[in-house]
Image 1: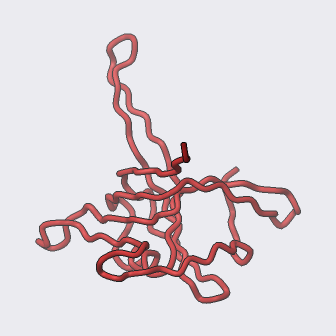
Image 2: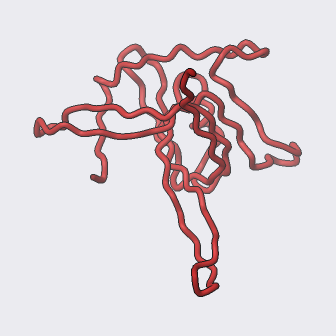
Length: 145
C-alpha cells in the first residue's frame, strides 16, 4: 500500500500574510492559521483548544494571499505536511513543520460576491500553475522556538 500525506484545515489567519521573494523572484507567503476544537471535559464544562498551523504558499497563490487575505480571514487549506531544516545565524540546526498549500480557498464573502475564491496551485482546469522552488536557502526565519 502506498502512503498519503495530506492535511485539510479550515481556520482563521492570526496575522496578515507575510510574503517574501526567493532569489529567483518567486513569491512565498507564510500564513499562521488557527483552528479551534470545542469539547466538554470530564466535569461537563465546555472547553476550547486552539491549534496553530504554519502554512506556506508559493508563486501566484502567495501573491493572491497577500492581495486578498488579512488577519481574521477564514480559509480552507489543503496540501502535504513538510518538515524542513536550516541553520540559524548562530549555526544551530532549526526545524519547522508546515503545510504546503496546494489548494487555498477563501471562505469569507467579498462585497456581495456570495462566496469564496479558490486558488489551486496544481494543474487545474483554469490552467493556473505555480512553479514551486523548494530551495529555502535564501529565506530568513525567526521562529519562536
